[in-house]
Length: 166
Image (tube, rainbow, N blue to C red):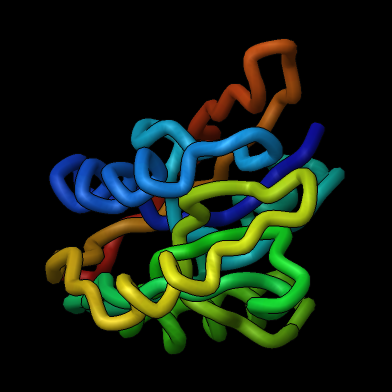
């Protein structure tokens, strides 16, 4: 069972991000459907959901605002595997989640817009949208999510939700 911890992006912001996918749709570029877009705080992989839920209950945070804007690529713009929309403001929550799980690593707040399966020239696209703004939103909870790969792509199921302190 593949697990990850994520923040759900509001539908209106996901739709704005998904619009960019229409611009880069080409052979070898697979766009992400808006309903599948999320902000991964920590990819866990295989794990015991009950054990992980117990650890995540210890994460305490107050609700906060995130800002979605800009585009980029992983691992870099010459060898693109993922095209993303940036999100700032999640760093502190991501650090708390990683500490609770005992696995700290570098964090880059982003939502995947597309996966690139073969070489594609997206330099002009990235330049055009580097400073796009998608909006601000409040984060008042995060989720432990199960991902199951299928013929239609991954299916996500929320296992547990963790809310901000009142």
